[in-house]
Amino acid sequence: MSFVDKVRNKVDALRGRGKETAGKATDNRDLRVEGRSERGVADLRDAGEKAKDAFRR
Image 1 (cartoon, rainbow, N blue to C red):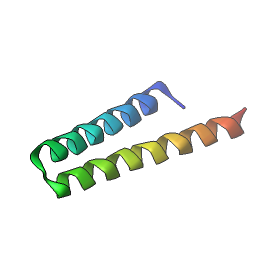
Image 2: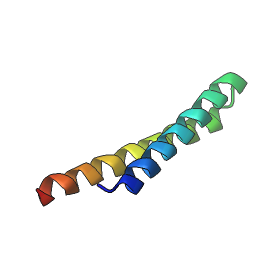
Image 3: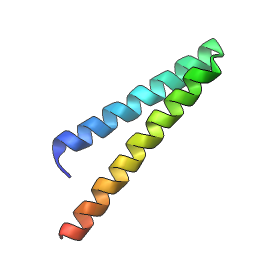
C-alpha cells in the first residue's frame, strides 16, 4: 500500500469520526450515520489495500 493511500484512508476515517462526533453533539442522526458510513468505507478500503499487499509478497 502506498503512503498516499494510507494517508487518504486515515483522513477519510478521521473526517467520518468528526462528522459522527458532531452529529452526537448536535443530536443530528443523519450526520452521525454519514460519519459512520465514511469511516466504514475508509476501513474497507484500508483492508482491501492490506489484502493486495499480502498477495504481492
